[in-house]
Image (cartoon, rainbow, N blue to C red):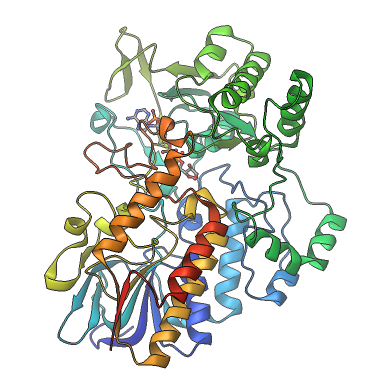
Length: 538
Ligand code: NA7
């Protein structure tokens, strides 16, 4: 590859995961020249890096996939209810090959800086391979969970054994057979990885700081008749998905929790617990808005934990208290609670038995107990949403850095653009439904709107588009306001939705909780009012 000649394109795409691949496909279709950079060895983004054992999506396979090409939909065979990481990786690699996207992708290449040059009204983008790229548009397809949080586990720097992060798992996997392993973190990643590691390890010690509500996934192989039915009606299914707030079909019950009898409510929870998955949250329409309704479902789950986990102390530690079910990202898992009945698994509840520090060989608890470990697994989360932006040197008008512009937290208009950074479009990240909806549906909206806006600019002779300060202040307010109508804010201590999982990170409720339908209506109004809140310049 020639790195010395500047690459001139209409649009540079940062990232080649779901967002980046979709962008590449559509940009080309609409006649734009483009190039994408991704630091991974392969396309896939989130699904390339998070290849730890048990990694799996918790949206149904047929919905967590691209709807832009009917033949792709018909040809691709999903094998399980929820797609595993290897299957998602295979799918995204297939998409890159099938549509010949690779000729516009440079892998193992990280974008290090993106500067808007006001003289030429273009983005000058540089990579760690020495490429320079000059582009009219800079499209940020960087993902919401792509930069791991810095390790803040005391003493871990002294630990001399191997440390594996779920978010950058070794490509050849890790053999834990017979080893003494510690796992830190019990969010979605830890909950998926721990039961798998427990099957292999000699001893597994799980360090839990905050207990989560974990709903059983009930993953299973797909029945060919079911798949045939979906494929026969795929267009309708996609249309329906776009007409529902979550961006996928979830079987939401319109009833409220206390308009039914106690027996009916229990039966509904039981049915959904058996059915598994995020659909559990759709048991009643008021679970996320009414404290009493939420208490009912939270009590139901705590009772399940008591039923499943044989040791009463462990059961007690696994039970979440102090925040409403669903007010932190709900976790979907397989055999999570059952894993703690295994002889080789111990739960260390850090709230009851605080950690003193890690040592060269293992760890010491405040009560003096010493542990030795052959390996440590970290599933400690991400510098969510903004991490991928602040880790690059992004400068807009007047050389102002994005980190500075976002010093009070990330501010955008509709999550699509930010003031001072013309022609930078952000795909499914802050200020948009992203992680609170089916991510792929959310991505689809943004990709469509981005290209539609670029077409509008091309057709009408506009050179730049830029969000106004006023519009983004108003949008940040709207995003907070919508979150405040729910029980979400009560779960935000320590939550990555607010940036509260990282010391010193400015706190703003980042994802838009209004769902993809209201969001689409808002976009339509904005566009129909001449891109209200954006300034278009010739
Ligand atoms: P999460 O959900 O941020 O979970 C991180 C976990 O790591 C969580 O249990 C944290 O406990 C724990 N953690 C973080 N730092 C520490 C320290 N220092 N000591 C002990 N425990 C710690 O990240 P995931 O990767 O699991 O999931 C991210 C998203 O991926 C998920 O929501 C889905 O959208 C997919 P805490 O709660 O902070 O007490």
